[in-house]
Length: 367
Image (cartoon, rainbow, N blue to C red; front, side):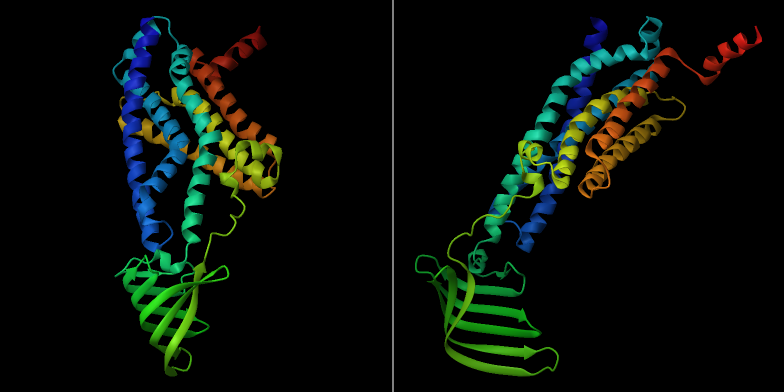
């Protein structure tokens, strides 16, 4: 039908353009944040693009939902301003008649959102956690590039190596600045080499000197050494710790229903349910008054979207902290949101008013 095809084509154009803009903005923001983490030593600089890709995939449910929401509001708002909606209404199409073509357009997007929220989201978090954990578990000297200062994993030491001979495990002109127990220590040596003692990596320095300063008293002590060893890491990666809740699969959350797991499950399922509800809410909020301007309706719609998603995050913390029940919260927020959206849509579709609902009662009362 002309009605269904015209609506879906317009929505497809608006959704595609909005999605490209949102993905570009999110990628730029995540790239800046990831580069900052790489500068601080939290992320391997060689894996910045990989971490950014995983992070963007994790944000895709929210991005897709927002793109779909904006596309529906913008498309119908334009049709209201250009009086196209008046034509459809005059042809016998009420506002409720727009729900069917919108759902036919939106259901593939809703399915993708559900797949991302329930399956891809924990997988991307698991991959990102493994990348960070592998980089954090590396020895301190493994982080150092020749000619650059680098902070250790614990943040209490700064290393500098003028030249690194990877094949022999030796280094030239080693500089170490350490802060520990109220003392600042500067250790330097012309030569150093890596030795493995048990499960530990030891940096062995030769013919160097050590400057130790006590911050409280200002006392300075200088010493020279012929041989000095300090632990800089482990010889192999230790066993991985427990996965964070956000990196656990949805199946694991369902099998072990702890408050933390239920909170995470409510968040993931909430993304999928919110995407469905947003289609109905966007249809209701799309009506604009040409005298108000284009921005008024869109700002109110975006405000509604932000409030909805903040309630999802708030509900996760409530369920995790034991202040709310999982089924009660899901029914109250998402069931209540759907019921409110459908009731509002029925009111707009049938042009219900409070005066029109009360008037028949008054007439029957006076008869």
